Image 1 (cartoon, one colour):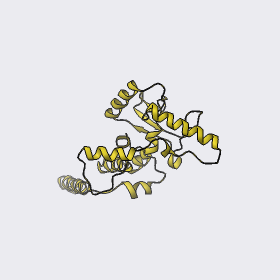
Image 2 (image 1 turned 30 degrees about the vertical axis):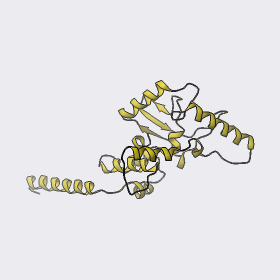
Image 3 (image 1 turned 120 degrees about the horizontal axis):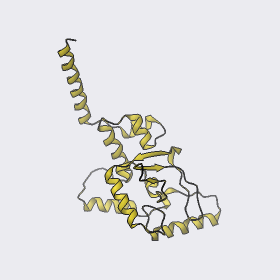
Image 4 (image 1 turned 180 degrees about the vertical axis):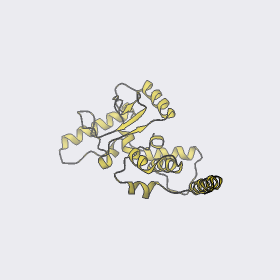
Length: 198
Protein backbone atom coordinates (compact mmCIF):
# COMPACT_ATOMS: atom_id res chain seq x y z
CA UNK A 1 0.00 0.00 0.00
CA UNK A 2 2.82 2.36 0.83
CA UNK A 3 4.35 1.78 -2.61
CA UNK A 4 1.21 1.64 -4.77
CA UNK A 5 -0.49 4.60 -3.06
CA UNK A 6 2.50 6.61 -1.82
CA UNK A 7 1.36 6.42 1.78
CA UNK A 8 3.51 7.40 4.71
CA UNK A 9 4.07 4.74 7.37
CA UNK A 10 1.73 6.40 9.89
CA UNK A 11 -0.97 6.90 7.26
CA UNK A 12 -0.98 3.21 6.35
CA UNK A 13 -0.93 2.14 10.01
CA UNK A 14 -3.96 4.29 10.88
CA UNK A 15 -6.24 3.20 8.02
CA UNK A 16 -9.63 2.13 9.35
CA UNK A 17 -12.39 -0.07 7.99
CA UNK A 18 -14.79 2.81 8.59
CA UNK A 19 -16.09 3.24 5.04
CA UNK A 20 -14.34 6.60 4.85
CA UNK A 21 -10.60 5.82 4.79
CA UNK A 22 -11.06 3.05 2.22
CA UNK A 23 -13.64 4.20 -0.32
CA UNK A 24 -14.38 1.18 -2.52
CA UNK A 25 -17.13 3.09 -4.34
CA UNK A 26 -14.69 5.65 -5.72
CA UNK A 27 -11.58 3.41 -5.63
CA UNK A 28 -9.64 5.77 -3.42
CA UNK A 29 -7.96 6.02 -0.05
CA UNK A 30 -8.85 9.14 1.94
CA UNK A 31 -6.24 10.50 4.33
CA UNK A 32 -7.47 13.04 6.89
CA UNK A 33 -7.08 14.01 10.53
CA UNK A 34 -9.05 11.77 12.89
CA UNK A 35 -9.98 12.83 16.41
CA UNK A 36 -9.45 10.31 19.20
CA UNK A 37 -12.19 8.08 20.54
CA UNK A 38 -12.25 5.99 23.67
CA UNK A 39 -10.56 3.04 21.94
CA UNK A 40 -8.89 4.64 18.91
CA UNK A 41 -5.98 7.08 19.22
CA UNK A 42 -5.93 10.27 17.14
CA UNK A 43 -4.32 10.52 13.75
CA UNK A 44 -2.79 13.79 12.57
CA UNK A 45 -1.62 14.17 9.01
CA UNK A 46 1.86 15.48 8.39
CA UNK A 47 1.62 18.98 6.89
CA UNK A 48 -2.14 18.91 7.71
CA UNK A 49 -2.97 18.19 4.05
CA UNK A 50 -6.02 15.95 3.72
CA UNK A 51 -6.03 14.14 0.40
CA UNK A 52 -7.50 11.31 -1.64
CA UNK A 53 -5.26 8.82 -3.41
CA UNK A 54 -6.56 6.66 -6.25
CA UNK A 55 -6.32 2.88 -5.88
CA UNK A 56 -5.39 0.78 -8.88
CA UNK A 57 -7.09 -2.58 -9.48
CA UNK A 58 -4.32 -4.50 -7.69
CA UNK A 59 -4.79 -2.41 -4.52
CA UNK A 60 -8.58 -2.71 -4.67
CA UNK A 61 -8.33 -6.50 -5.03
CA UNK A 62 -5.91 -6.83 -2.09
CA UNK A 63 -8.02 -4.59 0.16
CA UNK A 64 -11.21 -6.40 -0.83
CA UNK A 65 -9.60 -9.70 0.16
CA UNK A 66 -8.30 -8.24 3.44
CA UNK A 67 -11.72 -6.77 4.22
CA UNK A 68 -13.42 -10.13 3.70
CA UNK A 69 -11.02 -11.70 6.23
CA UNK A 70 -10.95 -8.77 8.68
CA UNK A 71 -11.62 -9.43 12.34
CA UNK A 72 -14.73 -7.49 13.37
CA UNK A 73 -13.11 -6.69 16.72
CA UNK A 74 -10.30 -4.73 15.04
CA UNK A 75 -11.22 -1.49 13.21
CA UNK A 76 -7.76 -1.08 11.63
CA UNK A 77 -6.89 -2.35 8.15
CA UNK A 78 -3.32 -3.47 8.89
CA UNK A 79 -3.44 -4.34 12.59
CA UNK A 80 -4.11 -7.76 13.96
CA UNK A 81 -6.58 -8.04 16.83
CA UNK A 82 -3.67 -8.80 19.14
CA UNK A 83 -1.78 -5.66 18.04
CA UNK A 84 -4.96 -3.59 18.32
CA UNK A 85 -5.32 -4.65 21.97
CA UNK A 86 -1.72 -3.53 22.61
CA UNK A 87 -2.39 -0.17 20.89
CA UNK A 88 -5.63 0.29 22.82
CA UNK A 89 -3.88 -0.43 26.14
CA UNK A 90 -1.08 1.99 25.30
CA UNK A 91 -3.65 4.64 24.32
CA UNK A 92 -5.62 4.14 27.57
CA UNK A 93 -2.41 4.33 29.63
CA UNK A 94 -1.43 7.55 27.89
CA UNK A 95 -4.86 9.03 28.63
CA UNK A 96 -4.60 8.04 32.30
CA UNK A 97 -1.07 9.45 32.67
CA UNK A 98 -2.17 12.96 31.65
CA UNK A 99 1.44 14.07 31.47
CA UNK A 100 0.94 16.08 28.32
CA UNK A 101 2.60 13.50 26.09
CA UNK A 102 1.09 13.29 22.66
CA UNK A 103 0.22 10.15 20.78
CA UNK A 104 2.66 9.45 17.97
CA UNK A 105 1.81 7.55 14.79
CA UNK A 106 4.81 5.25 15.31
CA UNK A 107 3.13 3.72 18.37
CA UNK A 108 0.75 1.82 16.09
CA UNK A 109 3.08 -0.88 14.79
CA UNK A 110 6.18 -2.62 16.04
CA UNK A 111 8.95 -4.41 14.13
CA UNK A 112 7.65 -3.36 10.70
CA UNK A 113 11.03 -2.23 9.35
CA UNK A 114 12.69 -5.43 10.59
CA UNK A 115 10.02 -7.55 8.90
CA UNK A 116 10.25 -5.49 5.71
CA UNK A 117 14.03 -5.94 5.51
CA UNK A 118 13.64 -9.67 6.15
CA UNK A 119 11.10 -9.99 3.32
CA UNK A 120 13.35 -7.99 0.98
CA UNK A 121 16.20 -10.44 1.68
CA UNK A 122 13.89 -13.42 1.18
CA UNK A 123 12.78 -11.95 -2.17
CA UNK A 124 16.42 -11.66 -3.26
CA UNK A 125 16.44 -7.86 -3.30
CA UNK A 126 20.03 -6.64 -3.08
CA UNK A 127 21.04 -3.01 -2.85
CA UNK A 128 23.87 -0.87 -1.53
CA UNK A 129 21.29 1.70 -0.47
CA UNK A 130 19.72 1.82 2.96
CA UNK A 131 16.39 -0.03 2.96
CA UNK A 132 13.64 1.99 4.63
CA UNK A 133 9.86 1.98 4.59
CA UNK A 134 9.95 5.57 3.37
CA UNK A 135 11.84 4.29 0.32
CA UNK A 136 8.53 2.79 -0.87
CA UNK A 137 6.97 6.26 -0.93
CA UNK A 138 10.03 7.72 -2.65
CA UNK A 139 9.91 4.98 -5.29
CA UNK A 140 6.21 5.62 -5.87
CA UNK A 141 6.82 9.34 -6.41
CA UNK A 142 9.92 8.87 -8.55
CA UNK A 143 8.25 6.26 -10.75
CA UNK A 144 5.20 8.46 -11.29
CA UNK A 145 7.43 11.43 -12.10
CA UNK A 146 9.60 9.36 -14.44
CA UNK A 147 6.54 8.15 -16.33
CA UNK A 148 6.28 11.61 -17.82
CA UNK A 149 2.49 11.40 -17.46
CA UNK A 150 1.96 12.84 -13.97
CA UNK A 151 2.52 16.61 -13.63
CA UNK A 152 4.45 17.82 -10.58
CA UNK A 153 1.42 19.64 -9.10
CA UNK A 154 -0.67 16.45 -9.32
CA UNK A 155 2.09 14.44 -7.66
CA UNK A 156 2.30 17.07 -4.91
CA UNK A 157 -1.44 16.72 -4.24
CA UNK A 158 -1.39 12.90 -4.30
CA UNK A 159 1.63 12.76 -2.00
CA UNK A 160 0.33 15.36 0.43
CA UNK A 161 3.35 17.65 0.38
CA UNK A 162 2.85 21.19 1.61
CA UNK A 163 5.22 22.71 -0.94
CA UNK A 164 5.99 21.81 -4.54
CA UNK A 165 9.69 22.56 -3.86
CA UNK A 166 9.84 19.77 -1.29
CA UNK A 167 8.25 17.40 -3.77
CA UNK A 168 10.71 18.38 -6.51
CA UNK A 169 13.81 18.40 -4.30
CA UNK A 170 13.34 15.02 -2.70
CA UNK A 171 11.17 13.03 -5.05
CA UNK A 172 11.38 14.17 -8.64
CA UNK A 173 14.72 12.78 -9.70
CA UNK A 174 15.60 12.80 -13.37
CA UNK A 175 16.51 9.51 -14.97
CA UNK A 176 18.35 8.65 -18.17
CA UNK A 177 15.03 7.42 -19.57
CA UNK A 178 13.53 10.89 -19.02
CA UNK A 179 16.43 12.49 -20.86
CA UNK A 180 15.97 10.08 -23.76
CA UNK A 181 12.23 10.81 -23.87
CA UNK A 182 12.97 14.56 -23.93
CA UNK A 183 15.27 14.04 -26.89
CA UNK A 184 12.65 11.91 -28.67
CA UNK A 185 10.03 14.63 -28.18
CA UNK A 186 12.38 17.26 -29.60
CA UNK A 187 13.24 15.02 -32.56
CA UNK A 188 9.53 14.45 -33.27
CA UNK A 189 8.86 18.19 -33.10
CA UNK A 190 11.75 18.90 -35.46
CA UNK A 191 10.49 16.31 -37.96
CA UNK A 192 6.95 17.72 -37.88
CA UNK A 193 8.29 21.24 -38.45
CA UNK A 194 10.39 20.03 -41.40
CA UNK A 195 7.28 18.51 -42.99
CA UNK A 196 5.33 21.77 -42.81
CA UNK A 197 8.35 23.81 -43.92
CA UNK A 198 8.94 25.80 -40.75
